[in-house]
Image 1 (cartoon, rainbow, N blue to C red):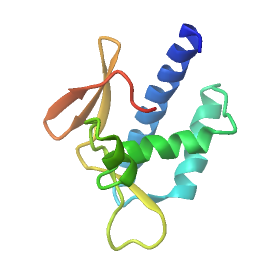
Image 2: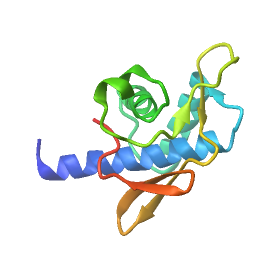
Image 3: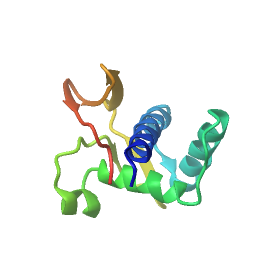
Length: 126
């Protein structure tokens, strides 16, 4: 893979992660996966970004990588911040953000915040 392609992919992931946190924080009770994907696709299109055939897989991978108790997160064990969770007692595939989750930009680096402690990360997903 060429360096510029890797950089573009990483920027897209960071932007997608930021959008996912913003979307789910706006709905503290959580949203069904279908509604999340519809809104994420809509945000990408409004921003003029390409929506690839693998877009939903990429969004789900980001969610799982940052989701409390998710098998992907456990398998990778790379210390990424827990930004999301699946609310207990909700039927269906519901996604939610932890109440204090946020993703900020600090000097061009994506910084995830859960609670009071910022955690820097350069690569939000595989």
